[in-house]
Image (cartoon, rainbow, N blue to C red):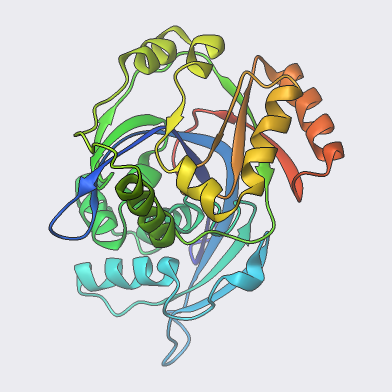
Length: 305
């Protein structure tokens, strides 16, 4: 490994369960979610600017949806690197290169994955040896999904999603990911969820984790898992982008065990029985014309490495 360059793979996440509680006084919602990291990854390379006089943090983004990602200090990955340097009281900067495969604004925490990847990469690059507990605290300052993105695997998230508890998962699950044109704003999806609930006078109970879902993960049983996938934001995402309903219906008609909107959308994910089934489903879904493109992935996988 070159001492002035570190490269990591940062995986996407899907929400196997996303249960949304009432709005809190701080404007956020209480959540219970089960995160699941999959091997659809962005590649992040950080290069030290130590020998470049007066250099500031720089970033370049290529790949999937790159034109929609800011290449300035507003990028979450740049904020992560700057926060790490500030925490340690150092003046080091870096140039960040991100090659994206995770969809942008697609409900798969691509920005969070990149921020987590940069925390890991810069910590190694600058030889800081920051304890994981401290990286988790920095991650939580940056965004609710980033603490999970540091770890990967499968975990329960509570609070805003930043309070994590590990989940035992055996075996490997195979997914087909339908990528859509355009993105959905997470705040707008939550606002639509609130609007639909108010319109339907729907009770907002405090959410709790699904025991059948945890059992399915412990047993490594995709058919049992398929019956347990839930996303409270799905009706809101479909309300804002109605074609998502057609995508899910098509995937189920083509043999998926289950299909849901991923997070706040608009990406849809389908659970397949096994790897061969996921390859066949991906080919048919790609030919159906209901989505822009299709990927296959499996999980769980570790966080940035």
